[in-house]
Amino acid sequence: MRVGGERIRSGEVVLVSLASVNRDESVYENPDRRLPGRRRSRHMAFGHGARHCPASRLARMELAVAMECLTRSFPGMRLAVAPQDVVLRSELAESRPESLPVLLGARPAGPTG
Image (cartoon, rainbow, N blue to C red; front, side, top):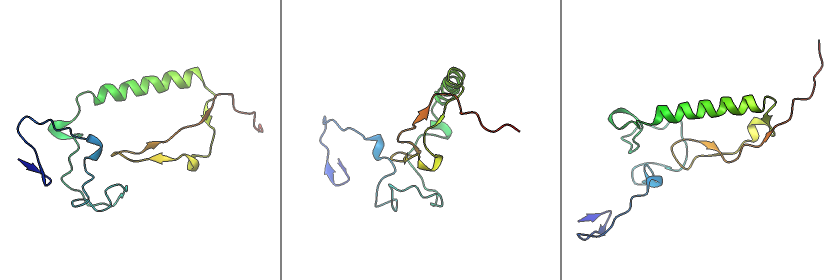
């Protein structure tokens, strides 16, 4: 069998890189750039429909509980940088912060009025 011009013999091991999904330059223009106005395509991600991840609700619940515990433990927690200075990474389908520096101390007292 041939895949992408490469011959694969019977019994050979083939590894699939999930990070390369939707990155085919012959199919997607600028595949590594996040383009909000990009035309929808028949992508290879498994996030919706019949192939929706069954654990996604659990993951969202775990994140919500973790964030609630974190904010209860550190009520004065805030960003240590301006929001526009948070660097986002977008190698995969979603963007996420490269780092998220926070200050754990209480907010300085502001003017009261």
